[in-house]
Amino acid sequence: MPVVDGSQIERVFREEYGRAVAVLVRAFGDIDLAEEAVQDAFTVAVQRWPSTGLPPSPAGWIVTTARNRAIDRFRREASRDDRHAQAALLHSQSGPAHEGPVGDDMLRLIFTCCHPALAASAQVALTLRLLGGLTTTEIARAFLVPEPTMAQRLVRAKAKISAAKIPYRVPGESELPGRLRAVLSVIYLIFNEGYTASSGDRLIRQDLCAEAIRLGRLLAGLMPDEPEVMGLLALMLLTDSRRAARIGPDGALVLLAAQDRSIWNRELIAEGQAIVRACLRRNQPGPYQVQAAINAVHRAARTAAATDWRQIVALYDQLLALTSNPVVALNRAVAVAEIDGPLAALALVDVLELENYHLFHAIRADLLVRAGRTSEAEDEYDAAIRLTTNAAERAFLERGRQALS
Amino acid sequence: MQQYMLTVHSVEGSPALSAQAREKVYRDVDAFNAELRTSGAWVFAGGLHPANTATVVRVREGELLMTDGPFAEGKEHVGGFWVIAAPDLDAAMAWAAKATQACDAPVEVRPFHDIPPE
Image 1: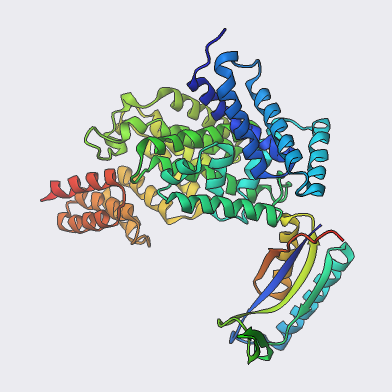
Image 2: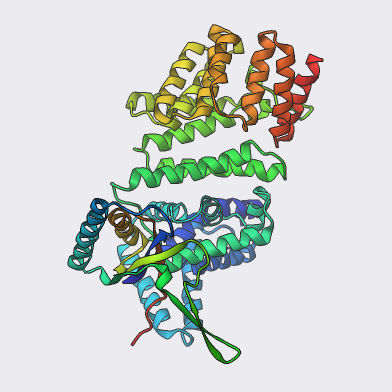
C-alpha cells in the first residue's frame, strides 16, 4: 500500500482547495457552507488517507465527500429552516446534470472575490482565503493585521456577498475589461506584498509570491486569450526570478546593476520571456505586458553594462502612453540616465510630484552622487531613509549615505 | 428577486442648479423612471423636500419627544430614493449607474432583507 504522508495531503490541499470550494459554492450558493464542507472533507482525508492510500482521483474524492457533508449538514438543519434547506438540497441534486467545466466555477469564484463592490483589502483577503485556502491566521500574519481584524474583514465581505447578492458569475463582455483589471490588480497586490516584504514573517511573505504566481497560472489557464493575464504572469515570473539576488548576505537590498546574475532563476526567466514573446506576436499591448517586456530586456543582459537601455526607454515611453503614472516617469528617468547621463535624468525627475515617495528621493540621491553634487545627495538620502518602511531598503540607503561622508 | 434601495444623497448648502440644469434633471429622472417601469424593476420611488422640513420623533423615558430638523447631524441628507427589484448586485449597480447620471448626485445601493414568505 502506498504510504501517504502529510506533505502529500498538504499538496492536494493547496492544489484542490479552491477548486472544491468553487464547485460547492455553485452547487449550494453559500460560501460558508462550501468552506465548512471542504474543510470537513480534508479532515476526513487526513484521518483516512494515511491508511487507505490516496484515492485514484483525490480532487474528485474531496468534492464528492464535501458535497455529501454539505447535504448532511442541510438535513440536520432542515427542521430549523425547512424551506431554505429543501430548496438548496434540490438545487444541489439538480446540479450535476448541468455542471459546466470545473474551471468555469473557479473563474466565477475569482470574479466574486474581486468584485468592485468589495474593498480592495477584502478582495485580497477573500481571494487568499477561498482560492488559496490560506487560514485567517496566515492571511493576518502576511498582511501584518491583527487576527480579529482580518477575521472581521472576511466575515463582513462574505456577509455582503450574501446580503447584496454579489453574483457568482463571469462578467459579460461589456464589463469584462474593467472587472478583469480588478482581478489582475488583486493578484499583483498579493505578489508585491510578498516581494517587497517590509517586515513580518519572511517565509509567509514568500508564500504570498508563490500563491500569486499560482493564481496567475490558474487565470492564464482559464483565460489564455487575455493578453494582460499572460502579461501579469510573465511580469511576476520575471520579477521573482531574481529574488535570490535581491537581498545581500547582510540583509541589505542589492540593486539590479550590482546583482549576481548567476543566481537568477533561469527556468522562471525562460518561461517569462517565452510569454513576453507570445504577447509581442499578439500585439495587443497593456501595462502588465509592457512591464513584463521591460523585465525581459533586463533579464536578457548577461551583465548590467550589456543592458539595452534604448529598448528599455522605448518600452517606458509605451508604458507612459498607457498609464501616465509619475512612478513610471521616474523609472523611465533612471533608464535615461544610463544613455544621456545623470543631469538629463535629474531634469526629468525634478518636475515629478513624488515628494512623499521614498524611491523618488533615493533615485535623486543616486543621480546627484553621479553628478558630483554630494551635499544635495546627502539631503536626499536623509529624506529617503525617513520615508522608507522597508528594513532592507533602509540598510541600503544608510550605506549609500555613509559612503558620502 | 432581491430588492435594493437606491438612495440619493444631497449636500446641504451646495450651489443651487440653474433652472436649465434643474429642468434637465427632471427630464432625465422621468425618463429613468419610465425605463424602470417598462422593465419591471420599479417598486417605488420618491423625491423628498429639503431636510429642514423633517421632524424626528422618539421615545425617551416613556415619553414621546418631537424635535424639529433631520436626525443626521451632518450636512448630507437623503434627497430621495428608489426601491427596485433586481436579480443581483450587478443588475442593481447597472440601474444605479443610470440613476446617478439622471439625478446628478451620488447614489448609495443597499440590499433589503429578504421579504418574509406570505
